[in-house]
Length: 462
Image (cartoon, rainbow, N blue to C red; front, side, top):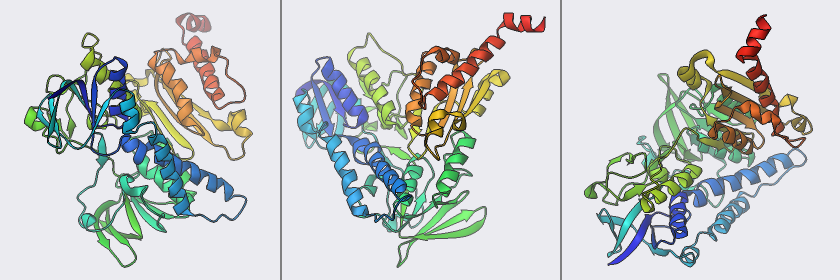
């Protein structure tokens, strides 16, 4: 039986990070993958969705100046070509050239550190499970009997539908809804919660919905899906809206209701690896089986590619270099929803901050109507909400703007390093840029820091 320093099951964002980290330490690595390397991010998530978003945005802008003929087949071909281009850096040949051994097939645990693939067994000193997640498909009566879309098969369509019901108003639902609407698809979004992206800062969720409504996307909030039927024209969805039955019809339906960890078929419970929806891990990302670690979507709690990368490094270093034994830290998590405008978040909402810190928090608002860079671009829109504690350290930040995902990174640096946000005002920012908005906000935080200083407060009273 072949023995490896590390066996990595899965080659998405978490698995590839784990494998390359181990290879960097000169370890003997085996990668097991049932499909193609790259995972959800390359084939049905981050990469193709951003490819579609960018093309849809170009067309949306072009529509302002001319009548545009949209060839969705060509657009989808280009999106798939983008995934294939990214894949050239992740192929089995690339992985093997880097020093790994790549095995295609389904992994099954025989023992905690013995894995079987297609009848052949492999042994490892340590194992990292990074099998990712799949679209969560709820047991709605009739759904399994009709053809439906998820992000997993969305990008394999030959053409876009003429009309679609999007079930779910989270990040995936919002991004794909806007892209399709800009490509002349009639979009109806059905969401059981009272607002889209309900976990986000409420005022910002409302802005996103209103922006999409301006692009002719229709929203049905507080609607719970109760039945799906196939019709001659396509799909019929029946919902319950506070006791009232509503009916929606379209050519097809896109289910965008979140993700489910990929834990089936590996005999995890049989070798003592605890599963509670996802794989249960401790603060070091070790499972209940000693020497077996899990990272990425299969472990959670944040199903984000950059979190998979973060966890992949920690899990692998803990497995191979136990003297380090780092804990994961989820205090500084940030993410972006790539609608237009983008929405980015780091840390708490205002309600969460008040619950933990009471009235000692300070909340700042900035509107891009005051930002010179935004003024130079007609129709540019942006808002920032910053929440700091009494010492000026960032508790939460919420940005809706062009390049919000880039702007949040500067806030994330201040937050992660525990720096007083007011210090940012001393950093020279290029002009005119979007990031100058953060410098201006930092200047206000700096002034308030001075005004809250005990000596200054005493002087002002005298």
